[in-house]
Length: 435
Length: 86
Image (cartoon, rainbow over all chains, first blue to last red; front, side, top):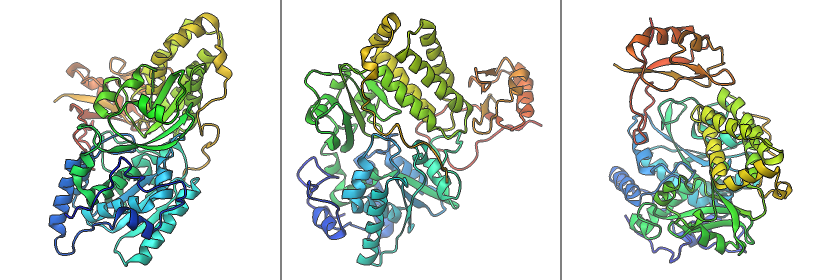
């Protein structure tokens, strides 16, 4: 496998991106990254084995949130005799996440290179690119990119741009495959997980846009290069969408290894400290101001019970009420339920109610106890992991903001309750359609 | 062979018959939806477990072979082996 000269910095996916760039067309893409090394026509079989091995050596994991090893998933899909399809997941259901949209606008061809490589590996020509239909800019960027690729060469892959409805659970793997198959964009019941989705009778490889962009770089520079930044257990970089109490919010590409604190400093977090940091997404975990000195790596984060997830980082300023913020998030997450499973339909609003009561009224300890009971009652009982994410978030809030719970129990609502919320995207996006 | 009860939460509509028929194995939450506990069904309760499976108007409950869940194992599209009541 030929190895191109690699860019000499931590900026990989966002390499060459500057303020003046608006969009990366195909020639700009080739100038930045070089051409995509697709398999030679006569040695496809050998190429597939080698490239699969490269991905395995690279240790690349899924960047959508679950961090499942890509090579394992790939092996499971390849084990099926039926031809596969490749699905690019750029749904970005997390309201505070902007990374997939950033890739769509600035490096759509990198993502499509990754998808084309995966299609070559599976021996298929079908690629579906899924973007939530309210993200018009990203939809347009992929449409233009797909057209450019058709004009550039008569490549055999067929790229279909899909625009499923925009809501939190529509980006879930089984929801996407059901929607492409003509059903509702709602998660399916799969007792044996992780399972492989099937689209029109063909097994599907559903991968996050950021994962595929990394695949495109591994094909160019090899697995050793990929592992040259990051930590042994978490090689490579991550795109983080940083928002909240920072002076320079935005999407940052950072290697695994440094602490979240260092990353937040870089984004302009206040010197006076933070009352907490939300990591992962709205189904993620709150970290206390001490815990943000943990290095960003799967193993280190696992020790404190969290993960980078979808790369969302929201800094909460001192003086804000973490309980009120969590209540706002949970209230919104309850509206995002697909409405299929009872524990989610009834449990999430009940949990949101309890949290709101704790945050905004003179609350009794009985309500806090009931909340703990309800967390136990709802956990693990949905068809998908949506309720579990909410439960994880609430548990972490009760732990990180335990002093606030005590304060609210003793004195009623704190002054921070009515401060403007740094949580983005939770007032709009009421679900109106599933098709 | 150890078996355990499994409910499909999408199919379940909180009729609650199952908890009436197998109260030792199934409890209802505050909204009326069944919780299976996830433990293997003891031999002496196998009959009430089967009655619970049969009673469900939504056919949401199954008796499945008890296997330790593994994160590394990737399921195929083959349905999990189920022990159907007769």
